[in-house]
Amino acid sequence: MAIRTILRYPDKRLRVKAEPVTVVTDEVRALCEDMAETMYAAPGVGLAAPQIGVSLKLFVIDVASGTDDPSELHYFINPEITHREGETVWEEGCLSFPGIHEEIERAEKVTVRATGLDGQVFELKAEGLLAIAVQHEYDHLDGTLMVDRVSLLKRRMIDRDMKKRALQDARP
Figure (cartoon, rainbow, N blue to C red):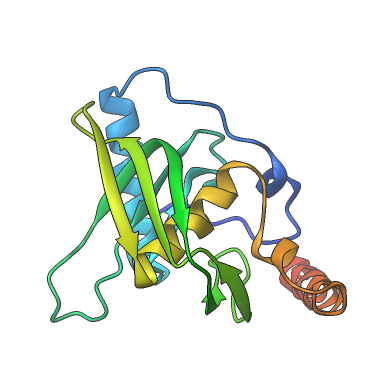
């Protein structure tokens, strides 16, 4: 397993629409394990493959709230949200937008169908933080970012802040 570099906004690779995984191979499983390790190291509750520059439809999520909680690690390969119910507003962050937290409107409950590491299709009904994380990571697969779900004024402020950080990070 290896910790991968997480792309930060405004990296254009975050806008690329991901391609389906054709077969769950050992390489795909290793990528998923790397993504989980990267997510935990960040630390975060979810990570989509496009966030590490891999344009494949897969993401990992673990919403366990602390080190004493048992892991709730889920791998989603070729996920599809099949049902959305209700509305809620949740303060979200994103590993590609470090330090930025915004209230985002999402569905309160979702049903997602995906393939697991074993190559078997499963269905998961989610609510609370898990439902929010599924929707957030699912957006990444279409090149949709957290900044796309806020007002134009907030989007401009976040854009300016993240571009300023990118310039500072690029300086020697």
